[in-house]
Each structure stands twice: as structure tokens, then as C-alpha cells.
Image (cartoon, rainbow, N blue to C red):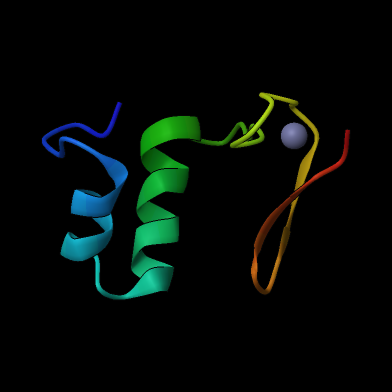
Length: 55
Ligand SMILES: [Zn+2]
């Protein structure tokens, strides 16, 4: 799921910069199609603190 990373914590440690991490996850996991982290809902909008599910 996280490529060369074994888990999310390892990924977070690598990407100390939160914004860089968010952008990485965005491209790696969703491409142009944003999906909710939690329930998989396809209506997600971005806020200044991350993503918010619309379901
Ligand atoms: Zn959701």
C-alpha cells in the first residue's frame, strides 16, 4: 500500500514535512481521484488540515 514503506508510521517518519507527505499520498494512492481514507467514499474535499469526507 505504501510502496517501499512497511507502514504509515515509517512513511510519516520519512516525510517529516507534513505537506510533502500529504501530496505524496495524494499522488501515490489516488492520482486525480480522491477517495476517503476511512470509508472509501469518492466525494472528498480538501481543507487546510487535510481531507474531509462528504459521506
Ligand atoms: Zn469517509
